[in-house]
Length: 137
Image (tube, rainbow, N blue to C red; front, side, top):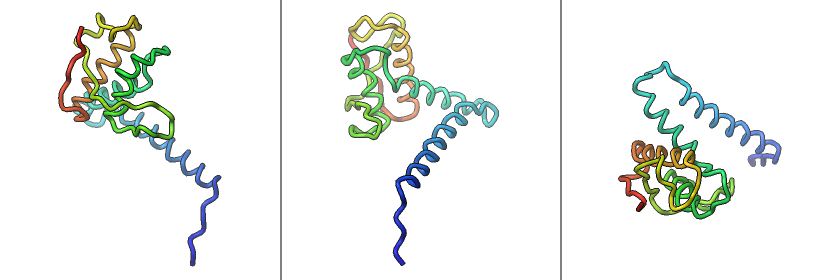
């Protein structure tokens, strides 16, 4: 007996359920401060650091996004061709020694730079990159 093909409505329902589960699992991991709290906290923080930097700076500065956000996406395995249309870089993300005084050769707000700095350090901590090389000042 041949397996019945799923309808697009059924597929959409399954994908929505899977997407919700991914978000719920992520938030539960970050929120759960009781289970192994002292051991979990640095890893929950590392996850948070990376996800908060994935979107990039709130600007249209494509050069900055190419030097920072796109390389974080590539380091964690986001494919160059992906379902969300996000651009991905191939270079190892570079570190920033002073998140409050350095702006990746632009005049961007330092808020994103801080997110980026912590994300790169977290990539190292979680084993996505082997070492941190720094931008030239």
